Amino acid sequence: MARSRDPLPPPWPIWKLAVILYPLAAGAVAINLFMLALMGRVLGLPELSPVAAVLFGLLLGLPATWVTARWVRGLMDQADGRK
Image (tube, rainbow, N blue to C red; front, side, top):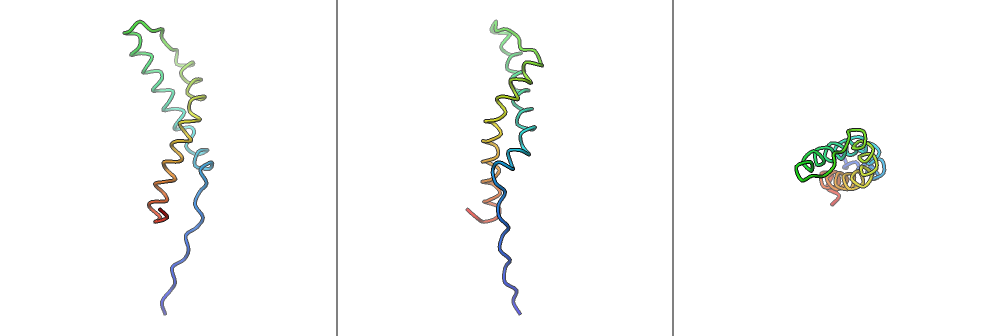
């Protein structure tokens, strides 16, 4: 007897993926801001302290997280054959 294919479970919503990915995205943004500020010193720009980079990373990590979550959701849909 042939077994019918089980339906796929519902996909994770983007907001759940964003909650999981926020620490990674915020940390990546903070590191990139700090490194950019270090390179900016060559051009005469003021330096950015590590604490300030983390605070800006927490703020700018929100849109970065949303974009990352949408990208991951698309990859998951593609892998499941939903797209």
